[in-house]
Amino acid sequence: MLLLVSKEVEKIEGITELTPTCQMGCAFCCYFPIIITEMEAKLIKQVIQNFPEERKVKVTEHLA
Image 1 (cartoon, rainbow, N blue to C red):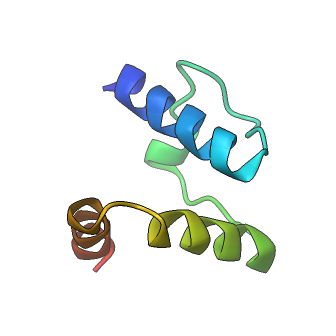
Image 2: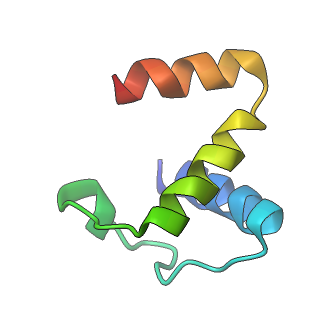
C-alpha cells in the first residue's frame, strides 16, 4: 500500500513541481490530522481537477 501512495505522491510532485517533507515509509498522515495552508489546499484541488473523471469521482466520494 505504501508503494502505491509513494507513486501517487511522485505524480503530484511532477504536476506541482513541489516536494513533500514525507518520505517512503512515513505513515504520519495516515494516523494523525495534517494541517495544510490555503495555498496547499488550492494546489491539491487543482491536481484533483486534472484527474481523469473516474478518479475524480472516487476521490470526491472518499472525501465525502
